Length: 149
Image (tube, rainbow, N blue to C red; front, side, top):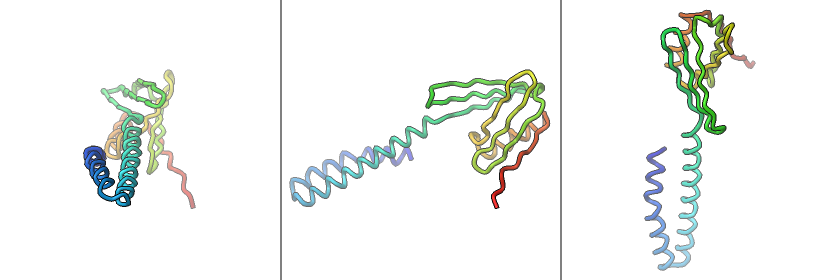
């Protein structure tokens, strides 16, 4: 996506120059060229806006150091940062919600607030490794997703 946007904005001056020469040569073809150039500019603006919106979306980092899980999150829409940690020795149980589009695991502790790990943010392979690690340290309850018939 980045390459396409860079290429589009790089070629745009050439399109505008061709539009200018087309207007001077023939008014009808120049008008068509203006419409085409305008359409390309609007498409590039929308694509750039969407790219910037998704590239600055929420992000999460997960750090596991022996017994402690650290979750660092960034919510760019509300300009908030989240830094939570929980020792696995203090986790009484974990609830794993495996879904096809957004798996999460909630770690319950007696003396700390619950920690919800957004596994969907780390990808399938990392999700499996995280869940396996937590299963090796504490009891995990698998809660199946809803089945629609």
